Length: 313
Ligand SMILES: Cc1cc2nc3c(=O)[nH]c(=O)nc-3n(C[C@H](O)[C@H](O)[C@H](O)COP(=O)(O)O)c2cc1C
Image (cartoon, rainbow, N blue to C red; front, side, top):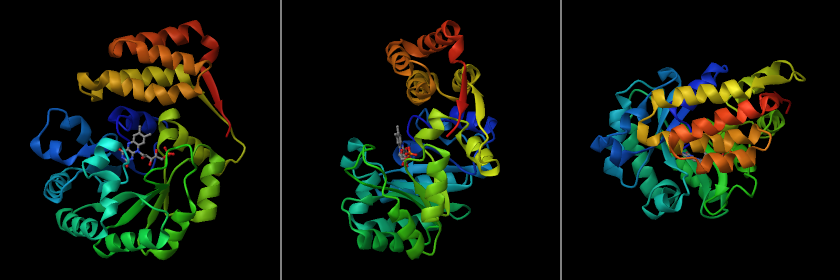
């Protein structure tokens, strides 16, 4: 997730027990091959190269393929291509979900990526597309499958749909049934019950979690524990978790990104906290990373009762 799935957050998740695979933030293909000043932090393989997927975003085939060739030579588990992003500036430029407008062009890119990514898994992340048209989505995905894409991740929303509408998980189950490659489902997993229901009802090969992993870096550990012991709660030290994130971030992020990444993370993390909305407003106004740090540390000093959270659901 752009601005969110930083090495610092991934390490924090790992320290709670980790998840099976981590995705980087989307990496601009053009910036990567031009060797931009920030690329080292985007491609960092923390916490574990064997479980790290680099995600590329891009607009035209040649630079995407060159970027994929470069990533193929780095430590990592896989290379993912983003055909799902609906951010207006990305779509306008022809990236993200804009690739879903033209199945033949997407298919040609998949074929070229397959030739470029020789030593790793190749995957694609996508949405339902521009219209509610399952046969069209299936044709699109079959094209990717036939070109050798190893698995797909579906965030089952239309291009125009925001988070206000629930993800259409039926599409995950349908693709799982109709494709022969693995299908990972994604969207709105906020609790153990969400996870269990989606898993049992739609039988995806995997589940990707986005926002809940930033709200609760312990989320994967909690899901695992709940699978073993259905009624067990998990007590989390929020002050220590916030402090650990603040320690990790400057060690793994260029100085120019510290403030934005800290504010993004706490935008989700504040969801755990008493008066979290007010805290987030203060954080957002704080100047620089040191300002964010100060507001967070003050908050816990002033509200010792906010330190512990019992994760129940
Ligand atoms: C702030 C933000 C940044 C995101 N960045 C990316 C990204 O870089 N690549 C991507 O494939 N999806 C990105 N997404 C979409 C998520 O990966 C995911 O599909 C979506 O949030 C639904 O999953 P969730 O309900 O578990 O969060 C982003 C979402 C948000 C909210």
